[in-house]
Image 1 (tube, one colour):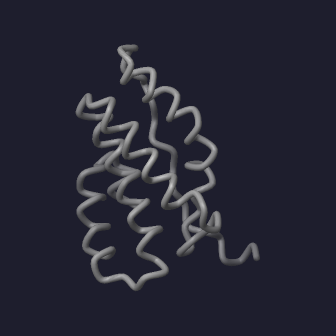
Image 2 (cartoon, helix red, strand yellow; image 1 turned 180 degrees about the horizontal axis):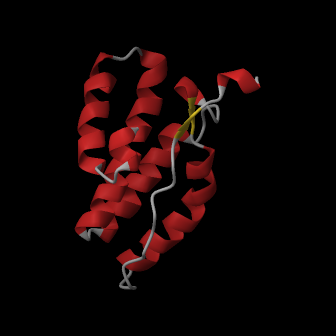
Length: 114
């Protein structure tokens, strides 16, 4: 989370892959979605509109169907931002201006609120 929040998307992806490779089946899909989400923003950072759009789509397929706080992570901001991000990345890929997007935050679920 700290790497992602610091804008170090490639490093976040690397750390998550280490966990993903050792995870059990139920959490693998969610972790893969987290990795893909981070890589989408790495593609944005590097100027790759196609990669940003494709990885965002893959991420949402993997994290979109699960509970909003899978593995104790609140990704509701991601889900809320995904449609606008997808439109921005698709327009960029189609020759539009590179969007000035900010990666939505990821938070840990507040265990005391349940």
